[in-house]
Amino acid sequence: MALILRRSSKWWYAGFRSNRHRKLINLGVVVEGQRPRSVSDTGDDEFERSRGRALAAHDRIAKEVVEDRTGQRTLQNLAEMKTGKKAAFPKLADLAQHWDEIPRRKAPDARYATQCKVTLKRFAEFVAKEQPDATEYVGVKPATAKAFLAAEMERGVSPKTWNDILKLLRATFKHLHPHLNEGSNPFHGLVTKASDTVNREPFTVEELKAILEVCAEDDFIRPIIVTGIHTAMRRGDCCLLKWDDVNLEEGFLRVKTAKTGEMADIPIFPLLAEEIRKARAVSVKSPYCFPAAAEMYNNNPDGITWRVKQVLAKALDLAASGGSKKALSPTEVRERGLAYIDALANKGRAEKMRAVFLTYIDGASLEEVMAKTECSRGTVSNYLNELERELGCTVLRSKKRALTVSDLQVERETGRRRASVHDFHSFRVTWITVALAAGVPLEVVQRVTGHRTTAVVLKHYFRPGRDDFRKALMTAMPQMLSEGAAPSPRDQMRTILEEMTAETWREDRKRLMELVAGI
Image (cartoon, rainbow, N blue to C red; front, side):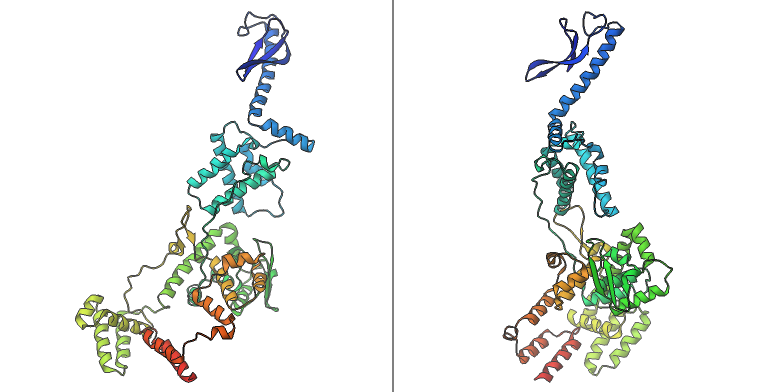
């Protein structure tokens, strides 16, 4: 556009081209003073003052034309027609701030709010580069919205994170101009992606015992872990457990869950009751049962996660190795091992075990022990494992790398971060799995966990192993179905004898005695 001065008119005009045709707009400003030969020349003071007023009018119209090209004027007119009020549209650069001001029943978690604002700011910066004319968020085109989501996928986010970004932006645009129809939302009609959810794995009984053993002397994290194991509460609810939620006399916790706002009624098991009594004995007039954990959770929740994962890595390593074993000096190990071998009734077997044991603890490798004693690898391994198990101390020189926190995670098919399969939330999965596998009604489990729907419990939390699943089904099946294919005692005894090893013979012997007693 440009200022136009017509000889036959007293008005200033703005000239622009539309569809290759030149058009003039009367700016409503009178030409005053002495006109110069050309509009590009300088006139007298009155003329220049009128030119200034004309330029201001020219700029206002130019801005309206640009806005109308982006569709903003059309949207604004539509909004004003629907509501009878002048519509105001926020600037795209202030999108995060306006999201923070959306009315809510409950204030969002600070960490979640930060993540949302970062996403909204990233979106605003993307639009500023992709569609520079869209300074206000209603000017964002659907093509730009799709381009941003495509860029997010190229950035390597998981399908779940992609879905969360889509939902955030779609809901934000809907909240910030509810007077417009869905079709004006640039994210309307976009479909969420199928996500490859990686669920947490429940702990076995042996793993839970190892976890409690590892954290037994840690007065900071032990109460939180014990609470998580016995209540199925989330990390934050455990750390922020208040004395008002505890009723030791009735043996129940009544907690309003932070995530869903549901009231959970949770029985207090003996080990948890012991922890609560310990906490009450050292209470410093804090509203929280575990004030140190509450302070860390409020200031640095990742610190709680890190402390828990340190315990889990050690405990799972311990459980995998068959339990805790004392680390004794080589002299003590030698003395204990020879004493055990001397007490064996089978002298021929004792001599072979003695040769294997002494050769190995003197520093020989398994291959060297096999060569010197003329025993097979299986025999050498069985002898050394038996000694380690019976002596209760470390005999084998393990080459296995100790588990670390990173071993508690697995790679995703897609996504920028690895998925956690063992963390604090696994206590919740374990509790629900054990309860449902033991026949606890689903509605009772929901009463404890605070889940609103049964679908969430069954999809994400009920994770039985094959043995647990089989036992639960066999117990629930009618007797005529469960007993129809049961093997005879003789077949069961044959199977036990065929599968017996040096590591399982004690348990196998017990099973054989039970079968014999039942015949």
